Length: 89
Image (cartoon, rainbow, N blue to C red; front, top):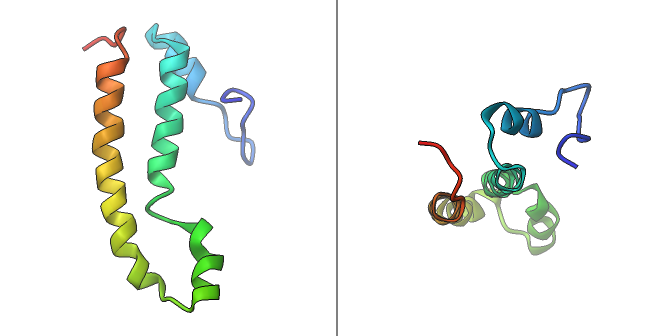
C-alpha cells in the first residue's frame, strides 16, 4: 500500500527510503502510519460533521486535539524507539 499510494503523481517515499537505509520495511510502514495518525489530530476534518450537528465551535475543540497530539507524539515516538530493534543510531 505504501508504494502504490500516490496522490497527484507524487512519488512513493517510504519503501525506497527504507531500502536505501537498510531499515525494516515493517518498522518503516508503522512509523509512517503512526506519523499520519498523529498528524491527523492537528487538523481533525473527521470532526467537522460532529461539530456542525452539536453546534460547537472549532476553537473549543482544538485545545483537546492539540493536547492529544502532544501526548500521542510522545507515546508513539517512545514506542517506535523501544520496539524497533534494528535502528541505526
